[in-house]
Image (cartoon, rainbow, N blue to C red):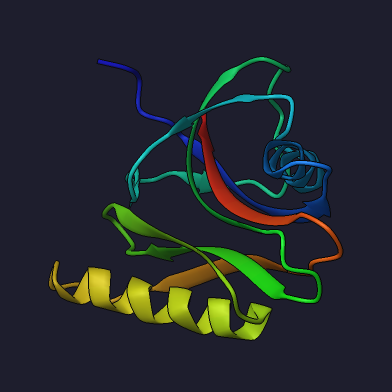
Length: 152
């Protein structure tokens, strides 16, 4: 069993690239998480995890991350990604992620709705909701990324 992360940081970024993969890589860099090895995880925030504004992790670290992303090669298309956490005092929380062909505001509304639904099914309501998002208008090949990095 891996140790339970004690900190989390919300990140978001978007970028253009010559390929879908390089657009994704540049979006990770824009989000400040591009030099880490992301381990994609599902959507539970560990109990007592502390929110940190910035990551303090050495490059190459294995970093559990819940994330949403979207890429497009349609010039002029608006894409957005958002990440959010619903925190329940004295308990674990939920992380919701989204990436789609929409505005930043629409992505944030979707995250808010998903947080409340995920906690309602657990008979809980959030004491606090944090959301981070990004929006991008595609020029050639674009990517929007938003994630919750869980760390130690």
